Structure formats: structure tokens, C-alpha cells
Image 1: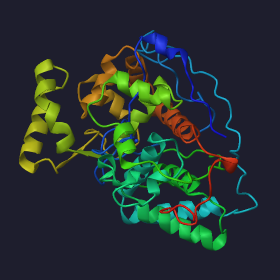
Image 2 (image 1 turned 90 degrees about the horizontal axis):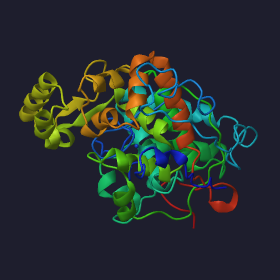
Image 3 (image 1 turned 90 degrees about the vertical axis):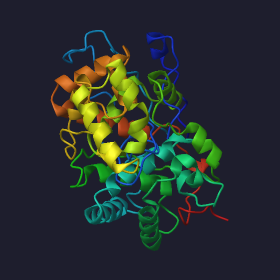
Length: 379
């Protein structure tokens, strides 16, 4: 059954509404193939569990540099009725093996696909929860045809996995569960070397689909304020710590100059962007145009580590939306905490936040269906 939308008390931290009106790598930014981010149309996302609140220390507790800034007590979250780690134990015992093998093979052939799968997962979440609706293919009408979805990739891989599962476990495994497992396996793949976390299954697919207009309204894009990002996460049952941890997906992947160029001059003028780094970005984008790719983490672009947060401390956030996380009192403490601690603190919280993301607002039981094809509802 659907998890009620949490109305957390952290609105009082600032008096503003919370998170991103988004998409997922996070962060809402449109992504191009091979890019990263938890959302959007300019970069792909990659992500990362144990229990909620475990490894990642909240800023302001014992995290270095946190102080009271950005401190936040993680609220209790009730388990979702209808989701179970053993859901497919008897009905389709090889489900995780089939998904994992297919994802590993696909990412080995094209390493940029890992970020794309994460982004696809986030886009599905951003519009009505993880219900597989982003996979529906109705030309000109469904989410897949939104402007925010124009560079989404990975549909074919999910459909291939679904076809194999239908052959072995007919009408059993939902597309929503396949996408959730595929996102986790993409993060843990050798190409990304991120964490692996346990999942609960039992999600059902939406019997219909959301419109392209709904996706363009809800999926976050680059340039949004911290207020908008917090509001988006709050609306979807997540919190400030989830926002900052999931933004760390930008420790890998790329963004296009088309996403970066518009605010470069203003950031340099305001002094929020490191001068040398800004000059480099201007030269690179001037030479390659808007289609040129830039690494989201210019220091360790292929390592799933906490360098992304260290970059923000030195004014080297590629995206202005990311850099703003440091300046805001609600998020800045978390940024400093993840930058100052070992990478495991961020990685642990990232995994937890990704699992939480996959458990909010899901359909279970008779609330949805198990599609025969991920690209079409059952008739």
C-alpha cells in the first residue's frame, strides 16, 4: 500500500518549502547519455543499505565541520506494507540473478549506461513514485515523450530483462521492481564500484501512465533553488539528508556544456565558482559547444567517493544547483560532514537514501498490475 507522504518537521528549519520539483543523479537536471545526476535532462545519475540512518553521520552530530548548520534528526519511517525481501523467493527465485547478470553485461559493453539506468529510475520516482510508468511508450503522450525525458536511455535493457523474466516466471515480476533492482545493480557494477544494498520487492506497475506534461512539471531541472529541491524531496517522503546524499551521485558521470554554460559568467562574477576552474570550463565549452561533455567531478571522475563534496568546499561544483548546497544553512552542514569524513560515510548514506527512494509512494497489492511488457499496460 502507498506510504503516506511524510510531512516532516524540518520545514521549521528554514520556513521555506522543501525539495526539487524534479525528475534523478540526482537533483534534477536533464541528462544526456553518459552523464550523471539523480535527475533531469542535463546529466545522468548514479546511485548507491542497511537501515535508515545507519552509516552516514548527520551533519551537526559528529561530522567534521557540521556544527549546528544543516543538522537534522532523521525521522522514523514505517515499513511499507506489501514489500518484502522474500517476495519472489518461491514465485521467481532467480529474479535478482537475472536482473544483475543482464545489467552487468550491458554496463560492461557501455559503461555510460550505468548512469542512464540510475537516471531512468529517478525519473520514474519523480512522477508519482516508482511504478514503472516512465517505461510506457505512447508516442507524444506518455512520460517518455516529455522534454525532461528526451535523453533518457535504458528502456531496451529493461524490456529485455522483462522478456527473460516473463519466459521463466510469467506475469510475476513487475517492471517497477525490475527498474529498482537494475538501478541498484548499476551502482554496484564494476564500472561504478558503488555500494550494493538489499531490496524489498512487491511493487506493482501503474495501470495507466502520467502525461508528458506531468513529467515536465515534476521532473527537476538544473538551475532550481535549494528551496525547490527540498520541497520536492519533502513532497515525496524524503528529507534534507537524502537530498544531499543523493546529490553525491555527481561524484561520477558527466554534464553537457549546454547545462553548464548559462550560469558560468554570473557565478564567476559572484565569486561562487573557483576562478581557475571557471576559466577552464569557459575554454572547454567555447571550443566544444553545448554538446561537449564535462566531468561532474573533475578530480576523481570515475571513483565513487566523497570528492564531489570536497569540490564544493573549494568552489568547484560543476552545476550551480550543487554549489548552492554548500551555501544554504540547511544543507551546508551535511556537505561539510561528507567532505570531512571518510568516503564510507557518504557511500553508506547514499545506499540508504536510494533504498528509501524506492520505497516511497509505491503501489502494492491490488493497487496496480504486473505488466506483460514494460512499454505497455495490460489490456
